[in-house]
Image 1 (cartoon, rainbow, N blue to C red):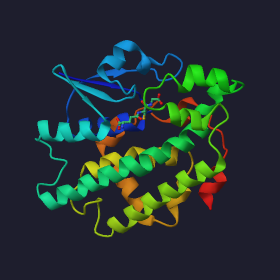
Image 2 (cartoon, rainbow, N blue to C red):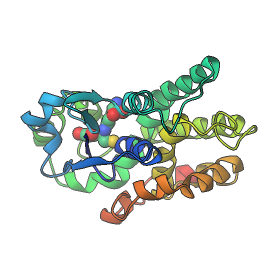
Image 3 (cartoon, rainbow, N blue to C red):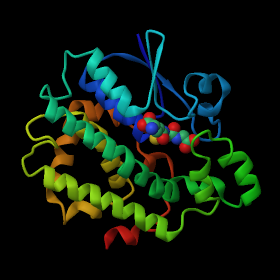
Length: 256
Ligand SMILES: N[C@@H](CCC(=O)N[C@@H](CS)C(=O)NCC(=O)O)C(=O)O
């Protein structure tokens, strides 16, 4: 039996949930509260994922971490529904997309997400308290939280993130010339892994980044949203805007 430790709104969890749904794999859905309860930082969870992040997959007692790694693992272990090309060169292209998506937009999307969604949690907290209860308790995110601090990322940081997301959309627009998917005819893990990032930006009201400039991204996103696996992943409560009051700050940069 597969077990997935995850959070409803976590983009990295959503990547794996889409993959599981595409493959019709049943799993035990273990939800962790990443907010007040910080269940992902408890000793019992850190034993299985020392990074203190979600998702983590446990397959028959074996732990697999990191969303992209989990997706590749699932695709290799359960090949009935294939989400990777057979051709080695095409598969290398998919992996190059995956590395790019981890390095560039996955990291970039965190910045507006935190500024617009999570910041109200820290309102009125001084830096010393913030560092002891929020940043320094996170095994791999201490520096990220310190950079944000209790009053949020600076405008330059937000702008740099939005530039990286625009860069991602520009690459998608070029790749989708052959379409309908990033690798052409073949729907793959590359589409799955970028989908929650695009969905988060849309949820934050920042689809202005691609709406006029990169119309193939708009069409691709509509194709993604029409897939049953996407709909199963984004159940009610899976979007930030449903449970947080988003601060409108920095929206104007996206519109430029
Ligand atoms: N490289 C990891 C990153 C996972 C990650 O950053 N997860 C976020 C949610 S999307 C998290 O658990 N954050 C916890 C925190 O900020 O303390 C993966 O792809 O699984």
